[in-house]
Image 1 (cartoon, rainbow, N blue to C red):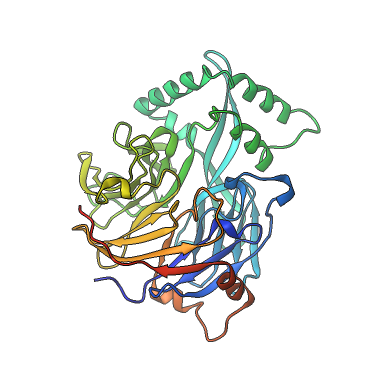
Image 2 (image 1 turned 30 degrees about the vertical axis):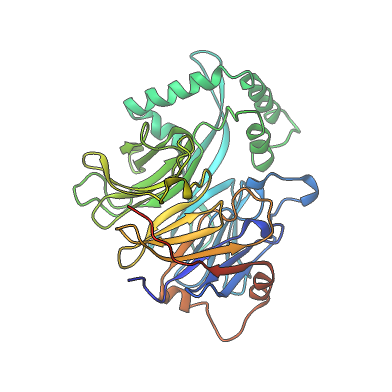
Length: 400
């Protein structure tokens, strides 16, 4: 049965340039919200969707909100939306809060790779570790370097580089990079990434990491406490990396995944992953047994194309064993059972125009929700209720 007091957190894309994060209950009521226009790009500059608002938002156990301002900063807000700290970093997509006082977040930086062959401009993704008390950066680990430490993965990455190097826009990326390095030019960050991403085919966007999770030890010893699970969309790959020795512990995905998001470890050591199915034309949720590795469980809509979220989205386990699916492009979240029944469903309604209504929806434990839900509503909550409407959907039956 669904846990009755679970709440859900998301940030509607259409609330830019004053983004809000909404906490809703199972009745689809907005019970609390946060808002801040800090570091938002000027609307007159016409920023693309991936630079607007907040990417992912997470809630700390004390009610503090962590929000990623795409390719610009990570901010920590108190329940009343006042700023606790701000870390100026080219963050994107995802973060994870540990119980050891650290925040792990994905960051991005242009990087020039020398031969063999022509130099190649890479938007290198990194795992950046931030001190939760101060917002100070304590470590940064290049995902490219980590992947290249694995013999088999390095071959796959090199193959992708060689293919993108044949793009007619590869040399334009080189020109942009060298312009960034010139005195007085724009420095790496939001503007640099935009110029490289806006090239047709985005040849520099080789990795496109979109999820990060700090892991518990695997019951079969495949990885250790504190290793990190990451998802790289363009490589159709999820991997576990050991930052203490900078090496890959485990990886899987090419040939099975297509533009996936939000891998997460289950209690039995299997990995849950939302397979967007960009090339397939429908999405699915998988459980993967990493010891084999092989798919151990699959959830499909009925018919499969009833669930197709080409970008963003995700899936996570809930207390009691059900799965929360974020159908981000449709602005919906579904709670499904392991035998394929829909136990709960909600739709968010905002202004149209964004390719995804939110990045993904996250479950919030009752004790954490209770730390922010109070008898009075602040201005952010009132604003959210004016901008966003949520409604429950009729329950429908799907098949596993």
